Image 1 (cartoon, rainbow, N blue to C red):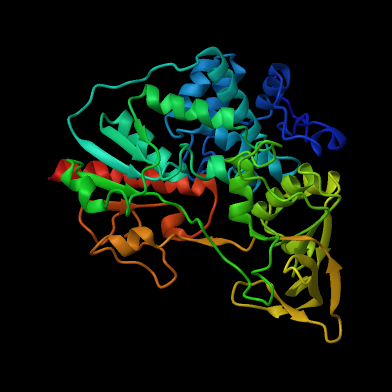
Image 2 (image 1 turned 30 degrees about the vertical axis):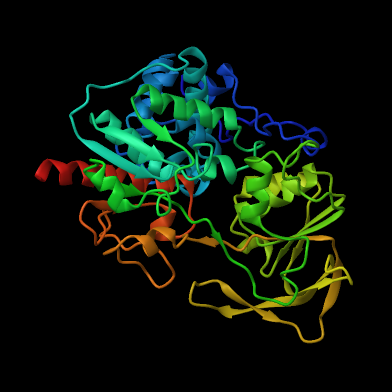
Length: 461
């Protein structure tokens, strides 16, 4: 019987009191009964609009139909045809603005919990089939992937399924890119990322870490080593700052550095080699998912007061609603319509306050959002001893500076033809290295598109 309830099954979570003091995963996942009940809400539309909202075009009604039939392996098989990282995507994708935003059930109630069902199916598969090999006979062609973030992993997975001998080169000591250094453990446990990467290794994908392409090896070197094509998926790891007075004081971090030290280098541990300063009052400047991640990490590190400082209002916050609500539940203060103008320090050049002005929203700007306008005479000081700038990132210039014939945008993004092909023959690119900072699933979509283009390119030679 179909479930015609207008409400999505609730996602069980740790209590705010418990989770604000630890890095354990907040969302606990559906039970089997909840997953089957939620799957029964799907109407199995003949022309499913949800699929058009998925950047990797998962056949959503098909995997949900298999789930309803208790065919868990079949459900996973349908998802894995399109996604190399289903357990990751089920956790961090903004389904509410993608597949679920197109769901017919969402017209008169809640959409079907597509992301929650994807997570359930992937987690169940990884628990019951650990390290299951899907290694395919090789076709004799080699491809290099630069960067092991979402776009690189998606490209590697699709090429491996086609029979290519794929090697992924990662600059850091751990594979996973932003999945391991950028997204906190309480949103995406690193054990999940390791399992997903293990699934790719079982398919024959090789990983080489501590390999900075552009320093240890160049793109030209990769071709000389026998790779027939190179995919650049190096992400956007160069942080942006406001260029206001005091940003060089001790206690001012980019969110990129702060999260990398916490997530990848274990700075929250007392015995950490690179500990984060223990502070009491933290201001995080920005309103996206990265700002929420940084603020919630600061709270878990022991800060007594953590503020999100954002120059627009709550409706304009770009972060996922779920992340905003979780931050509020945990006690994060939102200082909206507020803009920093200077970081103030003491005589030891340590942060003591953030100088801010109040804002109001004026006429829409080029992006269509109402432009924040400063209110005269509204300056005030917010006492803090740490400031984290979560203002976005841009591509690292290392690849473009060391690769001849590679056209880039003025802001650093690699120019492609839309299918991942760059101006340099045999070189393809996708994800944040092309678009600037975006979502995990959009980067994966770009990696999949490039895999098809690489396959066509090599077959045409």
